Length: 297
Length: 310
Image (cartoon, rainbow over all chains, first blue to last red; front, side, top):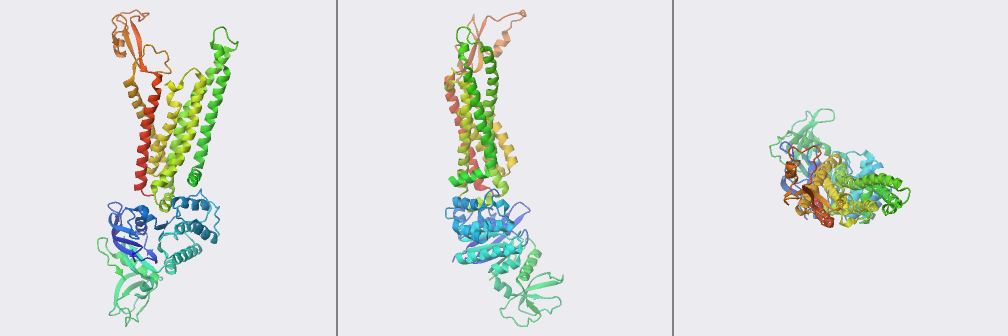
C-alpha cells in the first residue's frame, strides 16, 4: 500500500543561515496515527506545511498519497485535513458559519459529521468563534478537518495551548475518528504522554533531520536506560544519547541490537519519553554538516 | 454563491455598512438638492419680461445649491474609490494578517476560486452603490443645467456617470492586489492609495494626450462647458497666420504700446474637442481602467497562488 505521506531528500532553507530541514527522507504508513516529535525549531511545522503546499521544498520533494502538493495542489488538498497550531477561525463567524464556509469551499465537506461531533462536545453552533475557549476553538478546527473526510489529517501541535482536560478530549475525538474512518493522522506534539496515549507510530525530528522512525511499541521495547553508576554491558547495545534525568543525574539511552539480549541486568526498560529524550540529546550533539544515522525499522 | 456573499459581508460588515450608508446618504443628499433646484423653476426668470419678483432670491439660492452640489459630486466621485480601497485591502490582506487564510486555503481546493468568488461579490456590491452615487451626481447636474445634453458633454464628466463606478472597480482591483502582496492591512492600504493616485494621474495624462491628439480649432464653439477646450491659438486678422500661445505672447503687446493698448489684430481660436465625442472619451478611459482591472486581477491570482497564507 502506498504510504500516506512521503518525503525524499527533503530540504528547506529559508535564508543562508536558516536551514529548517535537511535531506529528510521518510514515509508515514497509511492507517496509522503517527506522532511527530521534536524540539522547537526541529522543522516539524515546516515539514507539515510542505505537505499542505504552504512551503516549497528547496531540495527534494514531498507527496501526499503519492501526489506532489506543490505542483498539483488541489488534488493533494482534496486528501488533506489540516489543523494548525493556532486555530485559524474567523472570530466574527459563528461555529455554524464555519461549517457553511467549509461546505462552500469543499463540496464534499460532511457538515452533519462535523456538527454532530461539536454537539457531542457541547459546543453551540450559534456561538461566535472569537468567544470560544482555546480548547473549544481547537475542537472546532478538528471538526472542520474531520468533516472534510480527508484521507490524511495533519495536526501541527494543536495541543500546545490546551489544558490537560481539553487535550484528553481532543485526542479522544481524533483517535475515535481516525480509527472509525480508517484514515491516517500525523500529530506534531511536544507532550509525550499525549503521543503515547493516541499514537502508534513515532517520528523524532531534530535539527531538521530524522532521528527515529519506529512504531511506539518497538521504540519502547528496543531501548534501555543506563542509570548512573550502572555497569556497562559488554555487548548487544548501541549508545544513543545522554540526557538529564528527573533528579538531575545523567541517564544514557541505549539501543538493543538483539531482540532478546542477555546480560543486561544493569539496564532498565526505557519509557517512551526517555526514548525521545535520548534521541533528541543525540540529535543536539550531531554537527549540522554531519549525516545523521536514522534508525528505521 | 449566496453563502459566500453572506459570509464575505459578515467579515466586512463594519466597512460595508459604514461606506454603504455614507454613499447612499450622499445620493439622497444630491437628489434632494436636485429637487430643490428643480423647484426653483428658474426658467420663469430666464424668459422675456421681468419674470417673478423673487428671481434674485431664487438665483441666490441656486448659487448656494450649486456649491453644495459641486461638493456632493466631488464626494460621489471620491467615496466609491475610498470604499474600494478599504474593502479591497480587507478582502485578502486582512485575512492573511489574521491568519484565517490558513483555514480557507486548506479547506478549499482552489485558491483561485476562493479569490474570484469573494472578489466578485464585493465588486458587484461596490459597482451597485457607486452607480447609485454616480446617477445621483448626474441627476443633480442635469437639474442645474436642464437644457444640457449630458450624454454629449464633457462638463464634469469625471465625477458623474459610469466613469465613477469603473474608477472604483479599478481602485478595488489595485487594493486587492496590494493586500495579496503585502498581507498586512495598513501597509497595503497605504500602497494601494499611492498606486491609485499614480494610476489616476497616469490615466488623466493619457486622456489629455488623447484629447490633444483629436483636438481641432473650434472657432464656432460657444459651449465651453460641453466642449473640452485644450488649447488656444491666435489668428492674425490681417495676414491670416495662426500663432501658438507662446508665439502670440512674444509679439503682443508690441514694444512701446501704451498701458491701455487693446489687441484688435488677433482673434482667439479655441482648440478643443466637441462634446459629441465625450462618449469616445468615456469609452477610452473605461478601456484603460478595464485593462488595469484585468492586470490587477491576474496579478492577484498569481500572488495568491504563490504566496504563503501567513
